Structures are given as C-alpha cells and as structure tokens.
Length: 288
Image 1: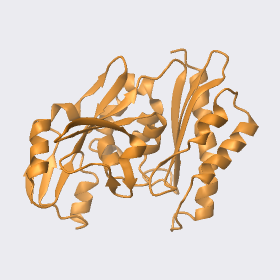
Image 2 (image 1 turned 180 degrees about the horizontal axis):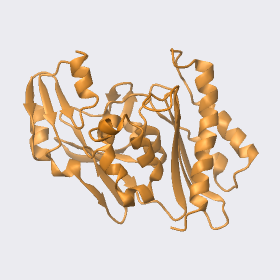
Image 3 (image 1 turned 180 degrees about the vertical axis):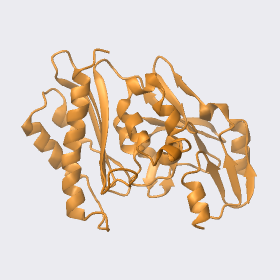
C-alpha cells in the first residue's frame, strides 16, 4: 500500500484517477484505519487529504457555512459561529466517539463511511446540507440525501472526493436539533436517530420544517411529509401524532441484537417528535 499526502485538490484528483487498484481517501481515519486493521479493506493507495487547505477550513459567507471534509469534530465543536447557526449539527458530530476520537473524527468521513446509523447525517439532512465534491470534471454540489446510495455506498464517481460540506445560512427564527436512542449512555451506535430544523414566523407558526431519521433504513431518510404536517400551524398534540405516524411510515429497519423492527419503528416516531419539539423551542427563543 502506498501512502500519499497531496497538498492540492488537483493533486488528489490526479492520484485518484491514475491509481492502480483500490484507492481510499483518509480524512480523520477513525473508520478507515479500523477497517484496515480488521482487514475489511486492502487498498493499494491511501490518499490523506488533510494537507489540502480547502478540506481544513471553516468559512462563513453571506449564503452558506462551508466546513472542510477534514475538519475534526473537536474543531467544529469549538467554533462559536457554527454552533450558533446550526447547534443540532454540531451536537450530532460531537456524539461521534470519545474525546480522543473527536480530535480525529471528521464530519466528511462520517458521511463518506455511509453507515445507516451515522450521527451527523440526519442532522445534515434536516439542515438541508450539501456535499461539495471535486473530481476530474470540476466541482459539483449535491444534497446529503442524494449522496447516500446504500450502506457503505455513496454517489462519488471515479476520481472524486468530498472537499467540504455546505450548510445554508438559516433564516430568522430557525433552529435545529438532533437526538438519538442508544442502549448505553455514551459512545454507542444509534439504534434510532432524528434530526429536525424548524423556522417560525413572528406569531410562532411554522413556515419551514425538515425532519430526517437514521438507523431505520439502508440510508438516513428525509420525512418529506413532515413539512406539510407542520407548516402553517402551531405545535399541538394532533400534529405531533401525525408526525409520529409519518415518521414510522418511512422506516425500513432490520432486526438485530440492538433492536427489533417493531421497536425501531415505534421509537423513530417518538424521537422525531422530541427532536421537532426541541428545535421548535430553540427557534422560539431566537431573534436572529
């Protein structure tokens, strides 16, 4: 196996295009190095993108927040502006592993590993996040939900890699939240997870809503009907009941030692309502 540490996007693309055999991109390494040690993968080339400036920056402009694919969870958690704009996303990334893992793990790597239970993904979908991809044909940007194809499989084509993740600057009185259910109190894989983003008007009515659930299907799912249930209304028991049913309806979980199909389906509805209520409460408390 050859190790490469390119210092530009162009150099990384060239390595990916010209690599003979399997090439893997290394960001934080908290997934790739485990897979190497367990002999789950045997790449011919390991391409470390941490020396590429664009993958290590957090930038905020008029329309979006851009987080480099190799920015660590610890760095993101210490960024006050991102935490203020999208607290749910930052909280989700902060749940990946221990404090030690946080100093290495990245949101880009968590996404590209394409685990159905990845913590950052439902929060990113709820925030209407986009993936910034560089490749031989230039840069392209696609939604998080379109990026994930199946467990372990993404929409990346040959020669492409993720440079950054982009989040929109949220409108006034917008807030998000992420919650998960795990068997233990920390450092566990989500059995069910939910991310929500809510925008309210001056009267406290919802004007925009996005809800996503994880660990209940081959990929994280956007609950498309959530917007129709919540928009133009106040949060009440009837809407929450409709929301729980709509969330459970999109679930296609599996039975395993951490939870049954029936359990995951029911908990998804409960957790979705809690995530929406938390995001709603945060939005009511915000004036910006």
